[in-house]
Amino acid sequence: MKPAASISLDLDNLWSYLKTQGTPGWESFPGYLDKAVPRILEVLERCGQRITFFIVGQDATIESNRAVLRQIADAGHEIANHSFMHEPWLHLHNKEQLHAEIGNAENAIFAVTGKKTRGFRGPGFSTSPLVRDVLAERGYAYDASIFPSALGPVARMVFFLNSKLSAEEKQQRKGLYGKFSDAFGTLQPFTWPNGLMELPVTTMPLLRVPVHTTYLMFLAQKSEVLAKLYWNTAVTLCRVRNVAPSLLLHPTDFLDVQDVPRMDFFPGMKLPAAKKIALVEHTLRSLQEHWSTGTMLQHAESATRAATASARLSIQTA
Image 1 (cartoon, one colour):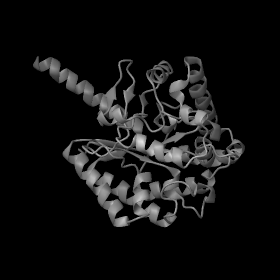
Image 2 (cartoon, rainbow, N blue to C red):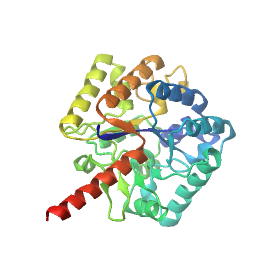
Image 3 (spheres, one colour):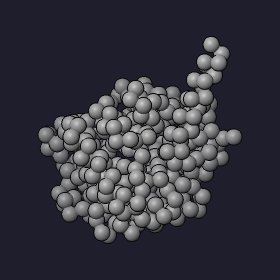
Image 4 (spheres, rainbow, N blue to C red):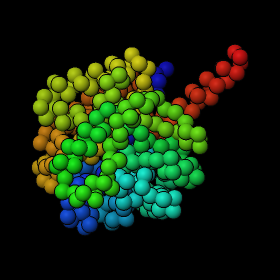
């Protein structure tokens, strides 16, 4: 039997990228979900793959988004929580603010999809012990906000250089993409002391550089051969190091600058959408070849069963 692995997609909308970057006009909540979601669902159906969609609560309150969000749920994909207002500074919130942010997203998402969220990922991988305590109190099964990468601070610096943020806004976002010490964390699922399961976003074993598809698109814009070599190296290292991957996708992996001209600042947007979609399919099929790929909740449940079995074995052999 193949070991479990998972695939997720952060359904970040146009307005959330503009907001994080400090671009005026995000307050009108411009979006591209009506264009991106059908493409995403088509690729997943073609690959016979069910994944986890982390949905931003605010998007579920917008009438024009509701049909495509229902399509995601109707297609059998897991629905998870990506906060209400996509603010990558959740680590600065107090307990009351966190309950409101997470709870409002739960309610908005349930109203549209009929699904209760059991998983959470903080925007920009924003997290803290208090965030995780609130998730545990609200009955969540898992969190997926840990990003064990050495390049997080570099990505944040590049982002700041290309943003229109004030010094105060940059200070607010200083936790974006994590810190260098995160690179030394485990790539394996683990349980926090409060009982919450953590599923880290997979980075390349040993090197701890990102492998989620946004980085592949950035490389493919230079060389598709290089991007595939990079990905195939990550797959090989995961197999050698016994790491069950948790792959992260984004809507921008299915769109290009012709689709969304206002996203011209984002990595890989000059690569034609057809080439990006072909690369996404390559990553999905290579995962399916070596792992039993499914949703984040399935991955968390598999990790829990494995940990329970290991604990029983330890007791029996003690």
